[in-house]
Amino acid sequence: MRILMFAHNGSLNRGCEAIVRSSTSLIKEKINGAQVYLASAKPETDQLITKLDGIYDGSSQRIKKYSFTWLRSSLHVKLFNDESYALGKMNNNIVKHIPSMDICLSIGGDNYCYGEQPGWYEINRRVKAQGKKLVLWGCSIGAEDMSERKLADLKLFDLILARETLTYEMLKSKGLNNVKLCADPAFTMEKEELNLPDGWQAGNTVGLNFSPLVSDKNPQSQQAVRDLIRHIIETTDMTIALTPHVIEGGNNDFEILQKYYEEFKHTGRVILLPNDLNATQYKGYIARMRFFIGARTHATIAAYSNYVPTLVLGYSIKSKGIAKDLFGEEKLVLNLKELSNSTKLISGFKEMVAEEDEIKRKLQVAIPHMKQMSYKAVEHLDELFQ
Image 1 (tube, rainbow, N blue to C red):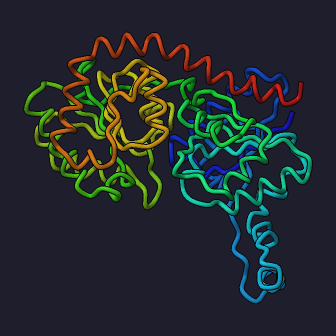
Image 2: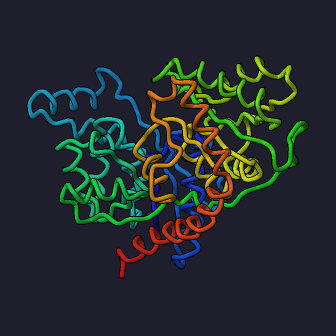
Image 3: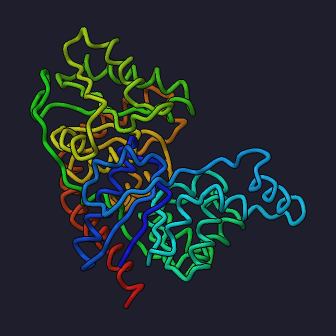
C-alpha cells in the first residue's frame, strides 16, 4: 500500500513534524508493507523524519504571466468561471504523484479552520477523479469554519478522521457519514531526552510556550504573559523554561520568547530552550517539567501525554476538544480574549498548581485511552481496503 501525505507546510512547525513523524510510525507499525511518502511545501525541513519512504517537493507553483499556461488559465476563468485548470497547474507538484499512490492523506489537521481552500479542493477532486482513496487525517474544524463549498469538498472524502469529539459531533450534525473519531497521532510520538540545561530544577520547572499567532490576534496578551512570569518568579521557587515549538520565518516562537528571556534572565530563574530542536527533543524536555503553559497545540499534547498538568493559551476548537476528551470538560483552556486579562491568566495558573495531583491522576487514566484512539485512525485507514 502506497500512501501520500500532503497539505503539509514543513517541519519548522514542530507540531506538523509531530503529526508526520507519529503518523508514519503508526501506519508502518500496523499496516504490513505500507510505504509512506510526504509532499511538503518545505521538503528540506523534513529530512529529519527518517521513517518516510520518500519526500517530495509539494510547494505550489506560480503561473508565469503571459505564458501559455497563464493564457489558458485566464480563458478558463473568463469564459467558464473555472479555476480548476489553473489550480491544477499551481499544485502540480502534488497532483503528479497521485497516479502512483493508493491513498492520499490530507494531514493538515486544522487547514480547514482558515477559510476556503480552493487549492486543496482541487487536489481532492483530482484524487477522486483518478479512483484513489482520499482521507482527511486527524482534523479539527469548528462550526464557524463551515461553508457550503467546504461541506461539498468534505463529502468527497472516503474517510474523515476527527481528532476530538467537538469536531466529530459537528461534522456528523452536517450530515457527513464518512466521519470517524480518533485522537491526534502525536499522543503516541516517542521522546528524546537530552541533557538538562543549567538552572533546570528537576521536578520543579514550569514550561512556557507563547506564539506570535496569539500575540498578533490579542496584542495585550503579551503584557498578561509578562505578568504571569513575574507572578511565578515572585510567589514560587520554580524555574521557568521558555519553550519554542514553531520556528519558521514570520511565525517564530523563539523570537517572542527571547524578549521575555532578556527581560527576566537577571533573576536566574528563567531558561530559554534552543530553537533548533526537533519535535521529539522538545517533547523530551516537556516530559520532565512539573507544569506546562502553552499556546501551540502539539506542545500541549507533548505535556498531556507525559501526565504534565497543562494550561492552554488561546482558545480553538482543537484545544477545547482535546481538553474535553481528556477531562470530560474544557479544563484549563483560556480563550483568546481572556489572555489579555492578567488576573484570569494567573488564576488559571493557580488552579493548575492547586489541582496538580488530581490532574495527574486524570491524565494517567485518560492518556492510555487517547493513545488507543490514535491507533484507531490506522485501523479505520486499513479498513478502506478490506
